[in-house]
Length: 161
Image (cartoon, rainbow, N blue to C red; front, side, top):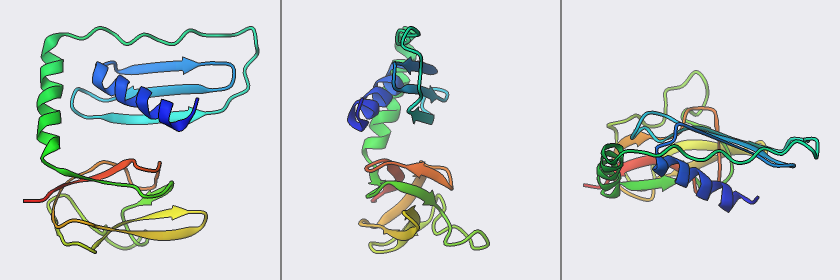
């Protein structure tokens, strides 16, 4: 299972409304947990684990959802479409501050300009400043401080107006 398949699975679980899905095969174990409706994915773990050949678990099926949460998710999705998503250009560890004793680069509600440093991503012991490519206002920070991030993972929502 490659990263694209895992990302597709995460998106499917988030849209389905299921709170948790576990998938185990001979060489991989994945658990995807989502928060309350509209909160998005809370935690995603994917790891290689050695498992005995005779122990194979079928993937969990997402729970059926009612029409009300789907409408609420559509409403949230339509609100998010007016925002610009700033995504991670690299794989690494996301830091909101330049150092532990300094304030965060940006907070929700801050106005940013093109070229402003938004965060730092550490990759292979190198700290890379992630700069804004847009001007606007930070609406939401989508990643916790000191969390691992993947390539193209959403980091911030920005209102360009």
